[in-house]
Amino acid sequence: MSEAGFNDDFLEKELFGGDDDGLDSASMDVDDMMLTGQSMMAAETELASAAAAAAVAVASSSNSVPEDDSRARLERARELHTAKLDIAMDDPPGELTVLHHPPRSQVELGEGAQGCSMFEVIPTMALVNPWQIHSVTATPNMRWLFTGGEDGYIKRWDFNATVNGKQLLTLGQRHSLVDSIAKAGVTASYWDHTDVVEGGVEMLSPVYSMAVHSQALWLVSGMKSGHIGLWSVRHDEGRRISLLSKHKKPVSVL
Image (cartoon, rainbow, N blue to C red; front, side, top):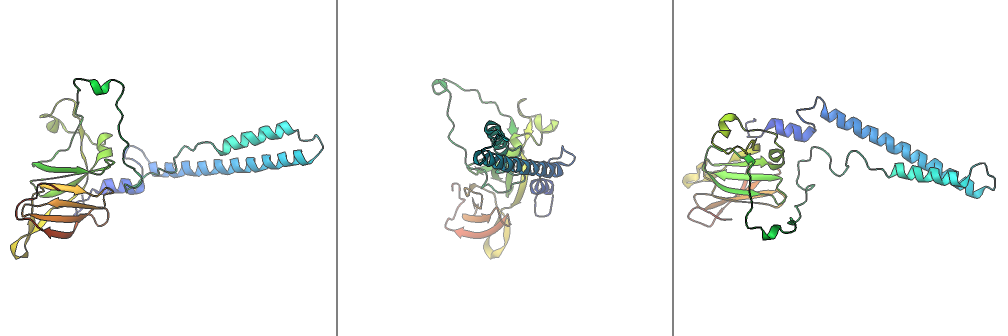
C-alpha cells in the first residue's frame, strides 16, 4: 500500500495485465496475439491466391484450373479470413477506464417471476469496514463502488473483482456473518475526506452522502460542517477540487 492509499498490487495487475495465478500471463497474451496475427496473414495470402486462381479460370478457356475447384478454394479462404479471433480486440486486458464498460441493460424477469409472492435473497459478499457506513454510491455499470462513513475516508472498491471472489474473508471476519458470505470486498484505493474549518485548519470529516459521475470522473460528498466537496476520481484521484459552502449543518443527501 502506497502513502497515497493506492493498492500497488492491484494497479500493477490492472496496468500490465495478467493474474497472480499465472506464471507469465502478460507474455502469454502477447504470444497469443502474435499467433492470431500470423493466422490472419496466412488467411489473407490464401484468399488472394484463391481470388487470382478464380480470375484465371474465368479469363482462360483452358481447363487447367477447374472453375469449381477455384470457387471452393475461394470460399475456404473467406471462411478462414472471417473466423472469430480467440482474443476479442474490443476488450483488451488491463482496462482502467469505465468507457469500455457500457451501463447494464434493463433486467428482464422470467415468465411468472413478477407474480411471485416472495423472493429469497442470499448474500455472498461483504465489504469490511471498521466504522459505520453512512453513504454508498456506484457508477451505473457497477464497475466501481464507493463507500464513506464515520472514519472520514472515501473508499473505492473493485466490484468486478469482489464478485469474482478475488479476495476471501478470513475466519475471524466470517464469524459474525451468515455462512453464505465468503467473498471480501477488494479495495482499489481510498483517500482522506478532509474539510476546512474555522482558521483554515483541515481535518477529517465523516462522509454523510455521496454522488459519483456516470463515468467516474468526479465525486461529490456531503460533510459534517455543511460543505460539499468536489473530488477528482479518474485523474489525480483523491484531489479536492473545490468546497461548496451553502449549508450550515451536515449534508445528508446529494
